Length: 109
Length: 116
Image 1 (cartoon, each protein chain N blue to C red):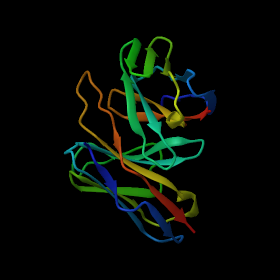
Image 2: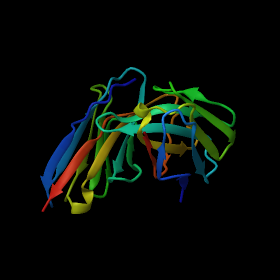
Image 3: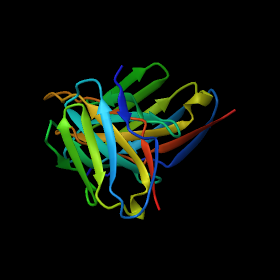
Image 4: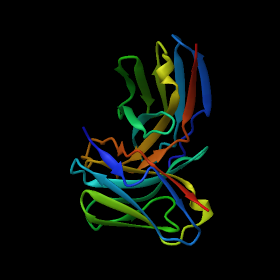
């Protein structure tokens, strides 16, 4: 496995920025996915990084450093609907996913 | 839109019962996966399949088996349910990955199973 590590919970206020960090073991690593999961719902795809650098998609951005085994998901201009669990997942060359335990983001008014 | 459906949202079974969880996807995806999700542990892979009639063990296959007789359908079987199999079960599917590409997984809504 890739031992995906991410914080358990983060709290931020509406309109703020939150950065969720994710670290992984680089052995056998291929790429990194971020998913959003609202309570009681299925995870939905947010972003995918395979090369070093920043991928921006509207209010959400994801960064990857392959040499450091590190990624982050940046959520800007937080909205109440962004309250959810955010899952980091590393993949190997066979396409097998290893998920982190998820980071619960709580957005307060 | 990709659609992954699971046969039940909630299921209550007794210890020792045989349990079938069904998953169907409508996008002709080659790959299908079964996970269980528990608080603090995240998603853990039980079994996956890259093609019809093919199956591979994931990280926690003990106590489970699977069946993939048709491309669109992937079934998870609990031969003799136990209380430690109480969990949320999520099915996912994806296209076949290329040499330099990865494909995202699309998840079903989940089945919350309670074993008494």
